[in-house]
Length: 87
Length: 214
Image (cartoon, rainbow over all chains, first blue to last red):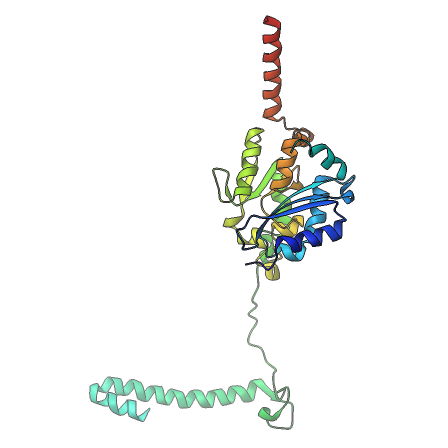
């Protein structure tokens, strides 16, 4: 059982990463331990995928302890613009 | 003691003998203990032992013989230490730490990694963290320095993929690298040719051939 909900996680990430777009989905059927996130932030610019994920992981380090699974997609605003029409 | 002795006297005389010998030995041992205490413990304080704050009234002064207990350092044999993981990740070009085995992954994310690597025809070492709590969590950090794989890579989740001894990511990263084709480059750097690349070339050739024949 985790005390975190998707709004909390989205808020925290948005604040820390100045995210221009963010969605967090709770895939855990309410137990709050499984999330999927799409984060678009200018802070990801010129960062490798691993570095981006590490940024997110370090922001959620405390939360990660009780989150069982966290899937993330990290895009720069530019990448997001390119991807948008497809999806 | 008396009661037991009396009760046993009814059963047999040999039993009685044993009990008396126990009683005797007890007396002997009590005086022996007293002597032992006198010999081995040196009074250092003035107040009674029970009243002392830190109870330093009696301190042991003698040691028996030269028996030495030696502890084999566990760190050399323990799994999940930095040295151990260092060794593991360098054993093969691609090394995966996962839940379950490639034939039977025990987690969807681990399964995804297995499937992606299979698509690229990569041979790799896999380590099942569910079979080694030390590797998974660094359970015995206090006694033998086992960090666990998560501490090692500073990555909170499993699976973890290493190429050329370098941590490259977990399931998300591998999947995205697969989708973007970046993984082919990464494998190439390690001297591995992706099977998908061959497949793609094969298809291209076929397409060219069919176009030519048209």
